[in-house]
Image 1: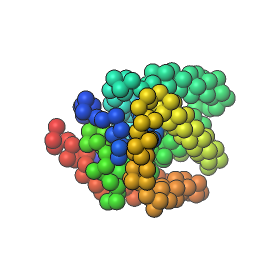
Image 2 (image 1 turned 90 degrees about the vertical axis):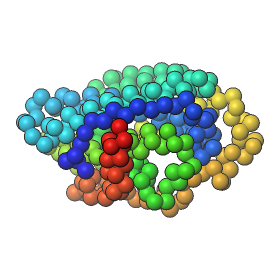
Image 3 (image 1 turned 135 degrees about the vertical axis):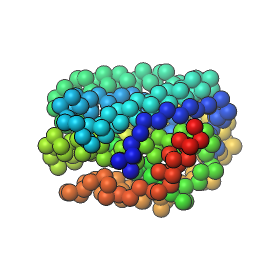
Length: 273
């Protein structure tokens, strides 16, 4: 998919999105709500990690892909920020979590502790996080993904974002390799990325749950019961296997097949614009 990379700028309307838009499950919804805060600043970090190399890259495919990568990530973070206003209207603690996340992840971790990392090592973290986003994005296009259990506009946002993540999944990886990146850097960065994904999303879930005044009533009504978890164990196992593939020597992101539905979704979105 990399050869066809484009910067797209779809519009989204979140006014009709219900409070528990993910399968009616408040816990799953708040877990995903946290990512709508984590993603925008995270993608600005990705851009910061790629940009220092851009001017020195010779004209050609990798330079063009890096430019498209930064353009796509810029639009992704903007679209997710657009959802913040709707979450505020629902009385959820968007801004408080965002302030903590920005201070911790980019004030403490990036500016202070990250000062001990080289630009190439920081790029390796971006490549590892891009592997996470690509693997998770592929789930959205599997035939067993229950699209009907999610609000249609949120599903449209996620599929657009996910399809573009699959489209540019190898850009940071290839740039890291082009700059002489090592296997040890790649594995170390994967450990850091895994800890960040698990830790930040867990804090985000707790933060949103603590700030939801309707949560207790929803849980008492059984909305987080077994029927409210649309992703089965087989899909989770597939994600784990695909994530672990990153640890193999000689791995490349293009070794994992992309669902053909992802490219078809982007084509349909462009024709509908």
